[in-house]
Length: 450
Image 1: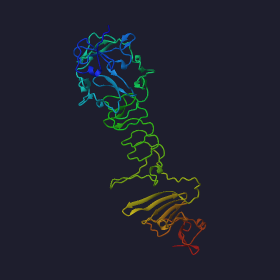
Image 2: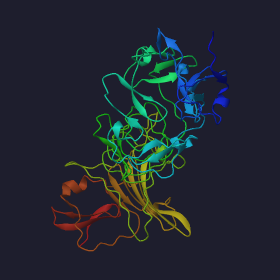
Image 3: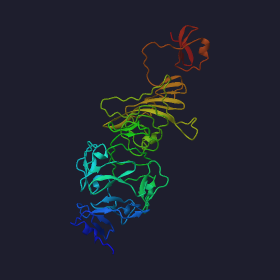
Image 4: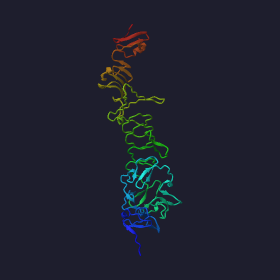
């Protein structure tokens, strides 16, 4: 004669009915078997799925308190107060986002404890092993023992499922697992994944994070020190907010602060700050100020001077102004460079003095109104001749204009033979060392002046 036990839906089982100790209940909708202990509403679940002739589970869904109906990639198991079920992680980025977790005030070293309704943050003070927990009863634990929940406490039990590793589960497929691998769900199985982790949102941790970050962007604030692979070299100091390390590759964006060390590569953008150290390479003016092709050194402090100093190391210092051309500049009347002296005030900018150089002359000019195009504003060194008031001297010294000399003037001392070898011109004055006389060339002949 068949034995029929108490039956009903799972909702009916979880009503106000509490089966007596040893009484069996079968739920027709979840196909689960429960036994009464005289205290638990709805009874205590009994595993009914066999594996190889013994009790136990071969997949997660075989467990009596796990209900997985539709499973999607990335789902997690959440507890609804009765069963564990698959659910989307959605926008959950921290524990406090979970509905069954209530965290109000959390302190360093706190642990999560279950109060029968929610997981809450609590102090772990005094907890050094499982036996210190109030709902864990451990007696006669041996190698291979497991913890099972009997409805009241976690107690020592024996694993009779035949499962000795994660890979023994039918929905877990692990090949080529390596250090750092993680289990991810691909829609069918849980598999070992050695790939990158893509995280959208904030990552908040109260401890150390050890990982390699390759070709990744950091957006937002970062709190804590950053160490190199050797775990001792500090790359970023969280207190001083200083980066101490080497950057290999392109840097796109703003760098605010001091850079101490070598910088190898091109710089495109605005540089504000001091440069202490060596610059190896070319500085092109059209890269520094493309519009005006100028290197501008400016002191914005009022009534403070500005100097540009070039120091050598036990050798001469050179300031070279070069004119580059793809054509031959030999004999071409074109300036190679100039040093200009300019003022800028309420009236605008005006160059009043300058030094100009080219192939056959070095010219100095000065004019209060800035017009240095007339000879009377110039003196020049051209073809080994020095001219004042003229741009084209014909003698070693040619002065156009009045001359005032403070001190003695010594005329050329020539013998009569040397005098006669001159190409004389009216107005010449010499001292004749043969006759010991001052002589002048007057009206086409040499005459004694005294």
